[in-house]
Image (cartoon, rainbow, N blue to C red; front, side, top):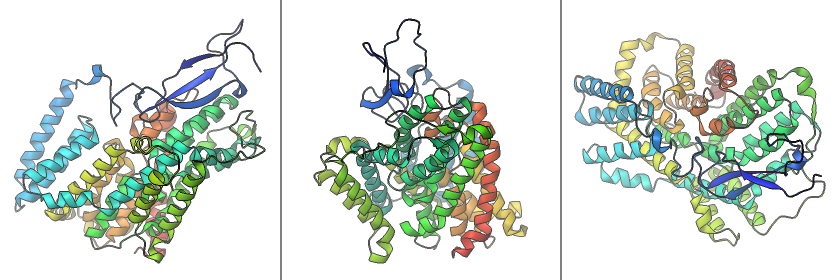
Length: 534
């Protein structure tokens, strides 16, 4: 153990709003430089409340999905001109559509305006969606009662309760404690460590619905392991964490807001009313298989000798020999989370609504003597995402009820001659569009809002099951690992020292994207029909 007065300095790390990563290193002795790497025994990582840092850019203050420094607020003239040209062209084309009622024209125009704002102007998702909803209400396309009904939608309350429970698990230390215990004994082979970590990351989707929060939870573990890995191993670990976070989210109903948009869409199309366990039965095997596939692809880039190499971590990252006692806050929070998952799994049998289970769990966390401050818990909830989900539901319902989606589907069916194509070709088309859509629409929920009416409805008009198509599309939207800016977990781990480069991401995407398209086709043609989704 080194001696001497320790020196502490701040490393601004993109985690979540209200969090900053502090990295403590010992005082540099004679002959050493500030950049000298230290062993895991000489460094520890802890989270403390500090300056707000943007989860993508790492800049302080004003944390949003696309918060940028003040100097970057001005948009390039070319981008503004392109947005204006696209807006005028879209308006002219929509006004010339024959036989379309005005509500359908206005709904489609609002959806296209959102798409232009999200992709060309790169404006924040939530304000754009809310502005579009208010415009539709003002134009009497959507009634105020529909807008009010969205606020009391059970699916929205399900996500709100899940967010509160997730915040309690993180603030109490239960989630981090379980992750550290799940890593197992020290001295594992690197490939075994990656396999175990894949299962652990996938398991966090059951109780932590936010992919950004899961990235913040896993970042300290990743940083603690990095000094003990070779460059190839470190690159693989940095790629593995965000990839599994994003792909595993598809297996759980509360794993992404896009799932709730999908549930609402399937319900309006007369499809089945999927419960929490139904979603797990249909999407769980696909998500787990996707994670295993991604882990195998990432490990193939590591030399065989280094895959078999044993990793020794002489830090508290490894599970302690003698288990430490649970704190006063951890015991009740862990019990509430376990009961909530049990309630979601058995709710259909017992007649419990998932939203009711989530709200009861949230109230128990806030008022059940856990020792956590309710205000601190509520500040960790992603209220902007909940507002965006509500606005997305209004936009989707406007497209459906106004007749815009069905009219657009009919024109696509006639113009592209989709009725002549084989089912396998149509499923492949939907899978490719869903997997590649993240390059145009960065938000997963926004991708679901755009793709469900524009892709699922035309293909369903050929005789395919719209519920199966919706499941295929929403699972395909989970792939967004091509660029660092494609998803917030990728942006978080892109800044890990010794991690991956943009070229590494592109190489991973070039192999993983076609593999996931094939995996989607296997499920659409054989697995989901065998599970009753025909």
